[in-house]
Image (cartoon, rainbow, N blue to C red; front, top):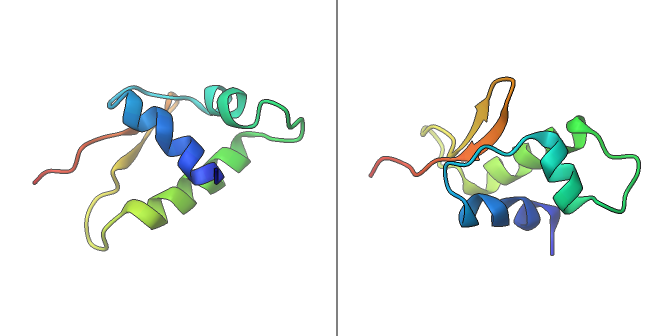
Length: 75
């Protein structure tokens, strides 16, 4: 499974729950030692590029000082 899909899975299972970088590292990169918050940010950016519609707000929100959460778009 790609890292982007691995990141998306907990967001889909627990909508509106905030996941911090350390949680994501533990869930997704648990066996890799050289992974840090920058790796999470990079993969969140890639996931946003796959999910987001141009001109619309991202469905993955950065909760400053807390982490990230998936929010449902306004329809």
